[in-house]
Image (cartoon, rainbow, N blue to C red):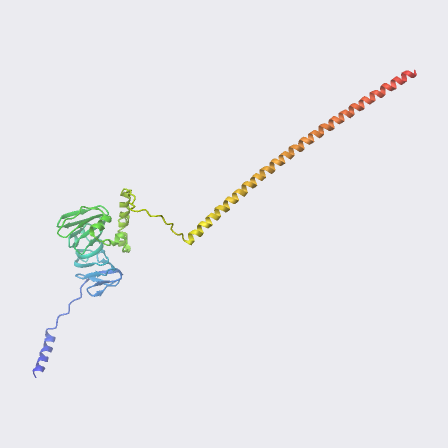
Length: 342
């Protein structure tokens, strides 16, 4: 009987004291791109899945998630990151009164939406980022060290070491929890050195690529371009020759068969070219000699022809003279004969 009474009491309690169903939370945005593994309070997040206030979004070591909020604000969450949408107050006019996120660790890119700049606030272990209608990257290390790189607009970072204004494109500040904060300077490889993590800003270094407006925002501030500029600014250092403790006889490095065959072909080609050149020179010389011989033969023939012509003229003149002389003699003889007869 006691067991039956106990069961009845449990049933009555279940009827009268059952918890009131909790109303579903209002979504504040949705996922637009997911790579590898991104999870939320309800499990893995897929494209077009909603995200909710107070929901913690985490990514794997290779994960990447891109999200858009109701007022058009865009947030990219890179690998190994953790962030919570701490507060979201929507005024039903396609804008928000308050949007606060708390970044615990990882790397992020932010582009403000249609709401007023005072509505946005990003909280990190080293301080708070105040948004001024802008786009920027920020990184939070495991020890809370925070870096902010301005991509457009303006931003303000305030921490234990005071506040710093970011107004120039590609300017960067680095702050530590409870410590100082650096002055704004252009992002470079020194930024990664100060953070102690070469993968701290993957959207700028090319480690991870974003799509759409989130991808376009980082143009011109890449770490690769900054590193190249730093290398070009550095003076070229002349390194002294290494000190050789003991001289050793040089050993000829064996050549690869392919290299030997190439050298042989080159030598053969060079030899063939030289032979062809020498043959062409000989041909040109022979042609020149032949032309000289032809000219000499022509001159000789002309000279011979001229000499023969002169000889013929002289003979003809002699013949005419002889003929004229014989005729005069015959006339004289005939005259003398006629005189003697008379």
